[in-house]
Image (cartoon, rainbow, N blue to C red; front, side):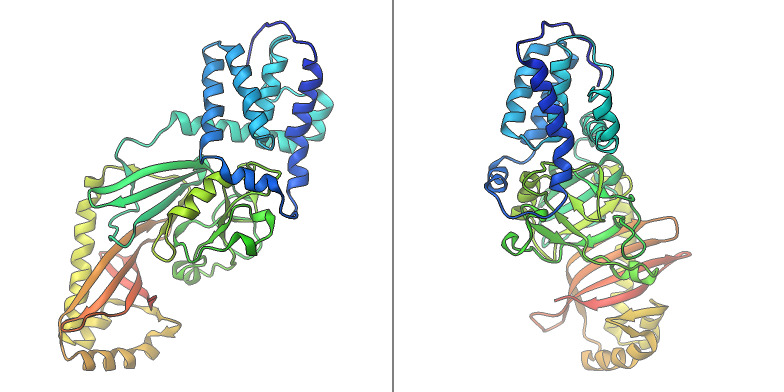
Length: 418
């Protein structure tokens, strides 16, 4: 953002500008370490999710309209309300500088400060660009991520993350369809995305589920308003030899409103008010989390043909199981199939026992959902359903991972999750 303004410099403005620069560039150094819980964190919790960013964007718009006095007044209020919002501090500093003459670049700090804090300043500049990009490149109205082939009523909410835009999208699944209800700026791994091994400081890509909701009282302040772990590595990750653990969605320390776009050890980090909204909204175990390099937004009707085609494949699997035909059933599984850690050879006797007990009874797949994941090596489907045999009231909740092999879909993992 370049400002070219010529307002008179108010008394004391230079000192205030220096303070803004110091706050913006020095705070992250202190906030990077876990600290004792302070009242500042509780104050952040009371802020409405998305409010600080909305106010920052309003300031950008006012600048674009050459309404610089109004922009300066709003920036002053924003940094007063959120003193740890480093990006807002820099914008405020630029607006103060612009009262003397043109601003040479976004975050126009003194040369010595720029040199000593080059990495922090670069991160704040990138954060500003990404927030502005999210404003310009909104998802089409009514569109959904292409991965959401079918959600069940049990999936009351869903999350999709576009790492190229540093954006998390929160959806509500209603009877009349999937609705986007909010979106937020996020930070990912210091080394980027496509996590492969423990300690590589990367954020994984794939289809995951929220596994638990950690009590913030049990966490260090470093994690902010709370944490939602996800099931990395999932069975597809494990099949490809990926390692690591402890990938969470979590907040920020009390002294840091947001982090640079690439600043975590692999987790997805949000400002505390935004994280708190998600923590209070989503459900554990049933909320899918899609993390993609770039989300492809499509009309809900456009995924229906693919959804029906895969539903036909699943119906064929269901029919084979209902008939009790072991050979027909085994034709749906890959040679490296795993059932809760058992190989195909070790699982086959268990399958035969299960089919014998069922005595050919029909089965119903309840609360069926499937989410598609496509990368450079394979197309996979993550399928979740309740399996209820005819005459029974309840049955196990299962999750399967399917992979496309040529024209056929095969199951490479199946497990009972409930």
